[in-house]
Image (cartoon, rainbow, N blue to C red; front, side, top):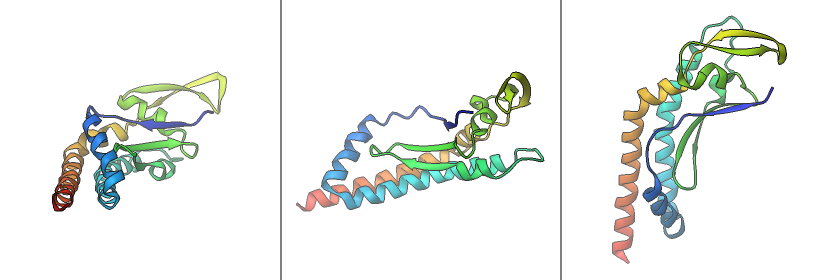
Length: 157
């Protein structure tokens, strides 16, 4: 079975932010490091919700693999991603079912001759939707701190 890594995105345009982030990395790396840490905090707000949602998935054979697979990543352009799944939890993607409730079909242990239906349990999409206000505020706060520090730094020169 191929591993899946699940990414759920939002409609935030980061193109202008990417230029600012690139300039910070070059001219004020300490501010960039602090900004990345603040952005990671924003992602952790969503990741914590996703872990709670994943822990609530019913099933006698359910393990904590999905919760452990949930990670926050901050790219070089300052994009924050909360991801789940991968090689250690390939069931995360199918259970998320693109954020839709209902059923999905899958082969039993990879046997393409025997398919079963299973209930979906979206855990990441609801976490993004519920956590977006808190995450957005944390990201804006981190950006405000970085802009203030950068302005102060460049005005002193």
